[in-house]
Length: 124
Length: 124
Image 1: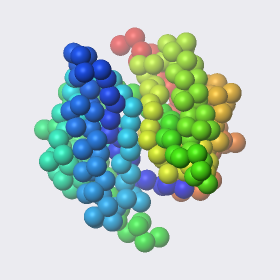
Image 2: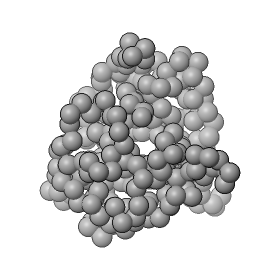
Image 3: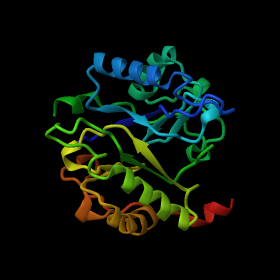
Image 4: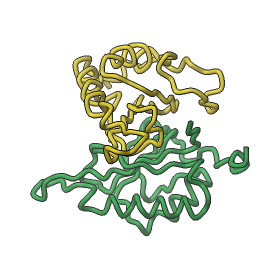
């Protein structure tokens, strides 16, 4: 059973090319997901933090959209070159990357700092 | 921005027909997701609880697999006819459906009861 410390869902949904909102796939969703998997794998974190494809997260105009659980932090306009910062600062360090956060996340209150990754769990 | 009280990811991943583990799509992942969307929509809960497609959740042999956040409760062998119970007991009531839970979820400790849905948030 996976017992994940963080679970990251990357929208890779595709809409017709003439959809005015665009879609995460056309904006690079697959590349963002791939980069996230590469960065997690090279740090040996894939059993603690899982990167998953997701269907439409309903924020198409802000694609590529990512949501990080359990804290439910939403990121938008994510590019592959943002992934190192998301991995190191948030997924490992616990601090959300403010510059990439979508606006209005009332469920977070004022929280932008969450538990850091517990690396010693990896060897249990 | 979605500010979800629960976010449910349903694996709809497809593997080749000869894969010995099978896959959630062949086991009815799309039907389970559709049923979940129907049940949430008819209760007017779609803005509080979102049902999403997910890529492989790495539990193919137990498909259809669902994971519910923020609590990270994993369900396996889910059928469309299980969805009413999951919606009413867990997603609304807060109590996980023990008979459908995958074994060994150490991140939960002994917890099977979580906050019930706050319905009055819907009108805010």
